[in-house]
Length: 216
Image 1 (tube, one colour):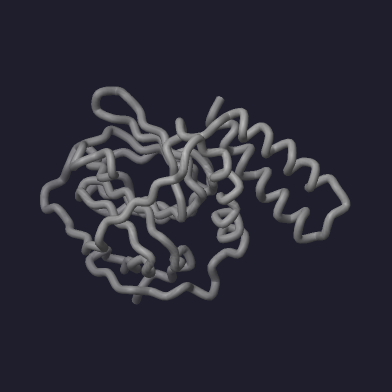
Image 2 (image 1 turned 60 degrees about the vertical axis):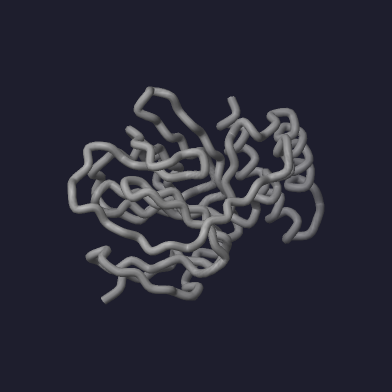
């Protein structure tokens, strides 16, 4: 019987996979994973998706305004996942700037706290807050991306999939622009606007403050 999938949503998919080299980017539904992780199927939007998590991911449009340049979009054909037979001692990451590259660790902003994923991590599904994804390479260097929130799926055989509506390299953001946007959002959040305006401003502050902390 399939695992309930409240974490699935119809949107542009940004996916990092570790161990099997793939990057997926599409406007179709994400695949659903069964308990044995051996098959996939298309799954529509789940009726029990968290409104707060969806709202937080949509609020990334506020942070997008702080980008130094126009955002780029990853466009790669949808592919089926495959599984390696051998047990690996390194994570393998595939992203537009990575080509079947082994990585040591990926740190993700899980809802339960910052989580480090290494090779042979126990399979799990984690909801992600707006925050920083840090990739530690074998050379000791790091790459950092700020994403809007989403979900991370740790699969068998050292595979990690990160699905987010949007994600950008951290260096693409301007600290000055973020600071200015925070000041504007604080005015709205503490002002006498409508309930909707105040609620949106508070969500905007949550995303922007996370981004500001990552830029320090």
